[in-house]
Length: 385
Image (cartoon, rainbow, N blue to C red):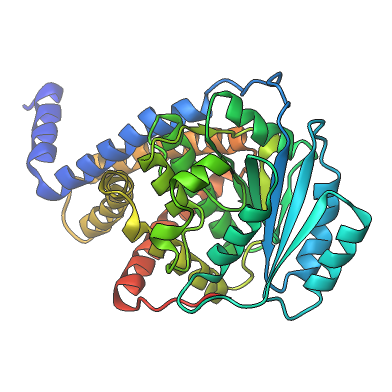
């Protein structure tokens, strides 16, 4: 009669020689490496210093194209920021056709530290937003600059203070986190999960010394960094990349990058309301990835690829005669460990999704990502505002 040890050894050996199960195990091992080396340590890192000096003034830049209603929500919150060293607000009207310009102009009359830059046209072939931002940066008076978008709001009135403390680490560029507002519906949960997972990657990679991107909704850097990269010169004709491609260029020039993940330093944005709008938004964001450095593309690609390989092999094994016990253990182990760490990251970033939804959102997201990648490969035409 076969012993328990013999039965266990037989199944371990059969698991190890099965190509499909081997691929599944390899994909899980890669994912758990990212969890153990990047995500979990970042989630458990100590809080950032709360007593760093706030001695340097800052220029806050907001570029807007037909954003009247969003500006009416954002600008009162910017004006209420608590930052003793002082700050100016540079409003950039990028070819607006509504009353954005009039609203901006009115603010400059009441608040001397609010200044206006008007863009009436963009030279042929240049990215409209990058061109507008360049004009705004030339107008800014202070060496430190903090950027957000018109459709965002700061999470607290300490946003400027928190983000500026990142420079004391020391740093030339500071990466912040920007979440999306929670709403009802599955699309909102998926958008928030995608934003959360992207944030977990670029923040934890930077924290480990491998910065590769930031988001223009919450990003700070010095004028020296902008000049060292010659502005957006290397990608001025690409629609996207005013944030992540600038980080790429800055890191190549030796810029020091800090991460500020405290909830008080976050910004909050309104998510896309339709699948089509989110699809267009993500195509534009992902298109910049082709210009990343090879090592960054590999680091991100291995993580994405391991997840896609996991789901592909797991589905394939459902239609073959596998060892169901081994398959169930492998899938359950991976799902539980990732869910636990994602929940920890959600608490650390104060961007919490229902724990029970995390495995579902994870699966849907990676198939959606695959569809986006195929779409970008087949249809590369992008449109801006």
